[in-house]
Length: 421
Image 1: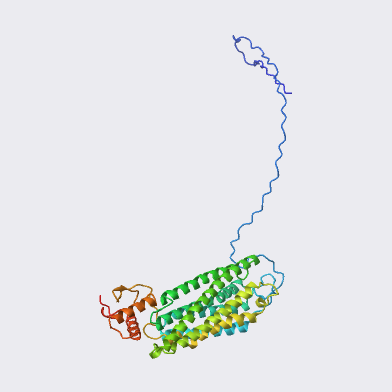
Image 2 (image 1 turned 30 degrees about the vertical axis):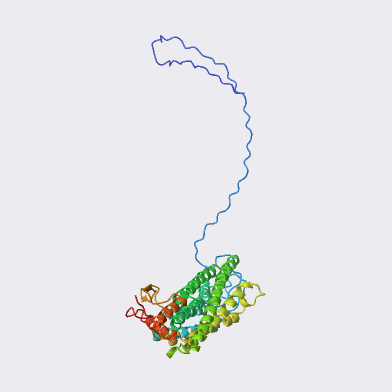
């Protein structure tokens, strides 16, 4: 209990000071009764403990791989550590001599392709040259990596280049067949699809496959954590699957083209330098596609079987050279032996640009760059020409139409097919 007393103090007078007696009335002492405040009881409040997690700052270090392990084994002079050890970039001891040999081989083949493209004046050959340059770059960086096996950048660069280089060679095969269809078939089309459009479709599929494989290879590249590697492998396998699907469809079209050419040859419709030459290039295209497919199946088997010791493919370098490096080298060499520039010679050997020009054919029909949309349209013009008595047979009208197309325009409205507009 608290008790407060309030009182008034009396006024003291200083004895040393003489003052006049105050006329004010005397001050009286005021007393106030004590005030009683009842006691207050505070209920204790219990605050549960709060745990604050430790925040790890984001690392801005760009070095690969991320420090997820501690090096306990001293690398040898070339930086090699056994598979499964910290920063083990290879599951085998990479061969320096073999990497040097394949760097030289791919470099020589690529230089030959550059010379052949210049000699035959075939600008589209830059695509296969890019494939050769990427293969060469891959084995040059691999050569350096065998002497610096703790440098993740070298190993990752080599791996990405060798994984993606075949897509350039594959795209080149698509472009070659498109030009063969345009050069040899009077309709400039196959199954109702123009040669330019057909080549564009497959090149676009190849680009999509390229991007998917690039993403997968970058995510699951050398030095990445196991979970990230698995994710990257799955993405990369999806890209390879799309690439192989495109190759199978393309192969079916190549066989269809083969049958058309045999029929034309049997009817005597191939004359001059075109007779027989189509086989050279087509029979070069088949092995090139087979070699690319062999390499794709090898990669699918290698990645799908995992990285455990039960899968010997990742643990022996000989498999990589036998089923990846050698097939790609041979695919490049086959195009050296029978270069497209030796077969696709003269007017019509290049695909027209993807633009539309107006040409008067038949009854003033608007055509794209002098090219028919499909074989049905071509035959309709042949019938119209025969009905007018302009051409004696289909062979003659084919020759005239081909000559007109090669000129990209007709001199007057009477050519070809007896236009009466």
